[in-house]
Amino acid sequence: MNTDILKLFLPGTVAFVVGIALTPLISGYLYRHRMWKKKAGKIDFDGNTTPIFNELHKQKEVGTPRMGGIVIWASTVITVAIFWVLGHISPGGISHHFDFLSRSQTLIPLAVLILGAFVGLYDDYLEVTGSLARKAGGLSLRKRLMVVAVIGLACGMWFFAKLGVSGIGLPLGGTLPLGIFFPIFFMLVMMAVYAGGIIDGLDGLSGGIFAACFTAYGGIAFFQHQFDLAALCSVIVGGILAFLWFNIPPARFYMTETGSMALTLCLATVAFMTDSLGGGYGILVLPVIGFLFVITVASVIIQVLSKKFRNGKKVFHVAPLHHHFEAKGWTAAKVTMRYWILAIVLGMLGMILAILWMT
Image 1 (cartoon, rainbow, N blue to C red):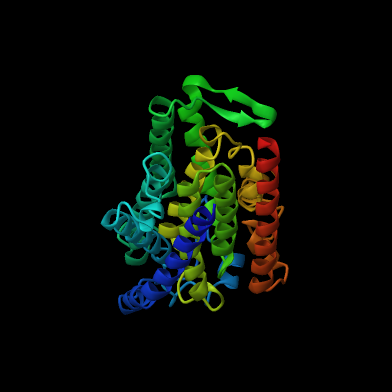
Image 2 (cartoon, rainbow, N blue to C red):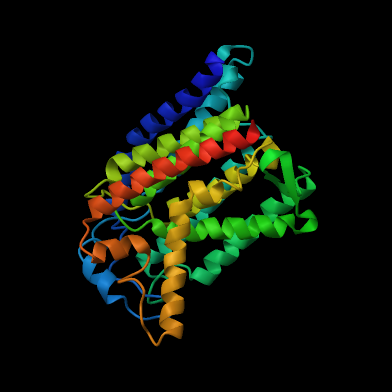
């Protein structure tokens, strides 16, 4: 048990140190090449400008690089490689026990993390270079959702065909059978979690929330004796904390798509890994652990529908919800800190439910 606990915390600590060490190199490159938006402001779903948001953030969107999420996934990949190399140098020694790269638990989430990271990186590159000649820059939402759908469907088919997963866990030992529709369900869940990535809108906001979510799922995986998966969650949290060190106000850089796409896709995959595959209820507690993502997406949907069916009337000053609080006069730091507190409490609640249902 002692080595299992060390396996949980040691890789995460190493990832934090690696991330801190990487940041000057990554940050220096981003600043030298001016990897930021050249014009402040954003466009809504109808192609119109967003005057309230633009006024709130007119000084923040230019001059600060995007692509800060590289710190998170790069430190994760490097840490995985470090422990894999150490484990293979001494296959019979203690270092072998700390190698958490396994086909059964971590290969799929790690692959999804990397794939999402590179798709997001491409989107960020287009955003800062303006290569698509679009008002908003970057890949369109439709194209990004199509990519996420393909990744989600492929993962769902792998779970269904290769791992024999065809349902999700229900409390008290029950199962909701989905049969051949399981891959579609997997795809829809991944798309829904990805949509929650729009919470990346204030300095430090998304990083703290993602850290709380992955900590919660790491705890659930550890309770399920999926120690490799728990270690991977710990490493991701370590990378996020290294990123947060430089992302708290005033942000040195922003996470943007290369970070948010990687983390949302990986989080959805981890939720399925801790569900029936791990003898748990990772999907049922996902709306609890990720509740802030849920209300963020819901606020956007409500705003769009209200404007469409109520002759342009809005429910919120501006959507997503965290910008509504900004518009009401809350400082960005107040919004961020309160969201962090809620994320930690919701993470603890999700772990409590997952563990109670398993016992």
